[in-house]
Length: 368
Image 1 (cartoon, rainbow, N blue to C red):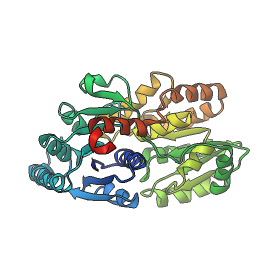
Image 2 (spheres, rainbow, N blue to C red):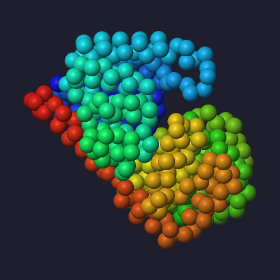
Image 3 (cartoon, one colour):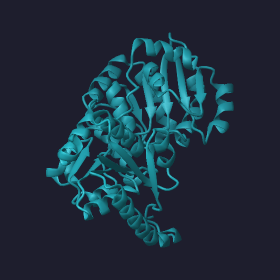
């Protein structure tokens, strides 16, 4: 009773993959899970920390711009197809699951050649190239957004939502603990700003560009994740200019940060949006311009269309982000409306629904 989960390249791919693995293990305690990722990517660190084995493929993306790096792509692809074949031949999985990212392409391609049941989980409203290429050959496609028949065969689509971490639920006790943990004032309104684990320069620049405005807000405080890449550059200025701001390199307790946030400012990655939906948080979304096919803007637009979030373009960040956040913070009716609408998009049982679809593919082997 074995399963392979393949993909990664970013937290938005690998954290849902780990959530699926955990849900599978809960349902089938004697299941053996093997991950297949891309050498040098985040999954090679995060998967072992989660308690799972992982094999790495020598694979990377094909660059659309003319570059000498593309000369190695055919060799990487052939190498990865051959290694994926050897992994599947040796491990003998009952089913192979792809979560997007470079490594899932060769792994699922080989699985379809071998006649092994396959399922892909697409997190975004605009699918990545790997999942689009695999769509016609896999058995089932689990998605998080409506209207995905524009990209995938309609008869294969199941709307399950995105799996999210299980520790983010909000309670009164957790909210109280959050203020103590981050040394913030429970009597003040709180903005939580983050741009991913490494940080986002435009969001950070917008904070300092609006330092005078932020400093004038006596009843407002900000928890700011500047990111590992930028903490040294921004921490000193924040400490000097912004006494009502706590700046961190990394937020190690996202559950506590979410718990005390009245308004969230963040990128528009699929995993983040799924968490905001589950928690019902009023949010300012600033899509990253540095992602494939601008899919974060499409994610954000899917929420804006149903009045579930506010979008600020990255290029307008310095002028609009803080102004709109403060305006939202002072408009409780709008906060409630955004929170109510984003909650309708939540799929709290996503992990279990995906497991249900996996079990349908190989009921004899997995159910014993």
